[in-house]
Image (cartoon, rainbow, N blue to C red; front, side):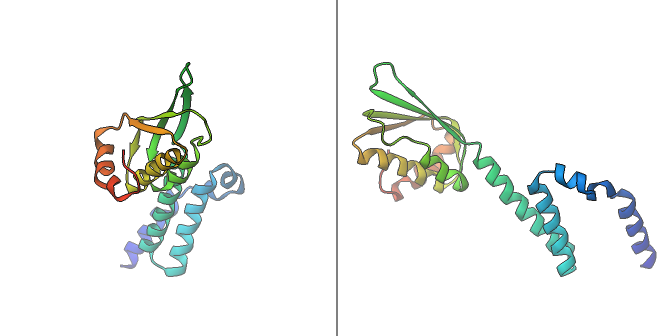
Length: 171
């Protein structure tokens, strides 16, 4: 057993990149990666359990990833030449983390009477995104604006169709 432990220690010392601990390297690496590394090591040292450290690091990395992907969702708008309709093109992944930004991305004060929300380049992942789209539609409806959604792909249609009846409005 002692020989196996010695071999494992020598392998880990030999494969570890000691330059990664230098202050210059830590400042060049994104803060989220440094945070994941520090949390993983801290949990391993505090609990003396590698599995818990890896779990904590993985969960933190998932949170950072979800936040980053949520920031990739965008809404752009185009007004038709006659001024009677505004088309909002939504792109990216729509899920619980991106919903607040999605609702804020629309201009509810625009006097255009008709709005089309084009979801061709978007993907709805869960009911939070469906609720956010229903909120957008309700905010426009409060101002007398009619809303039409187009371009919903088949995988996005499933959570949308399954849950939209639970919310205040439906399309």
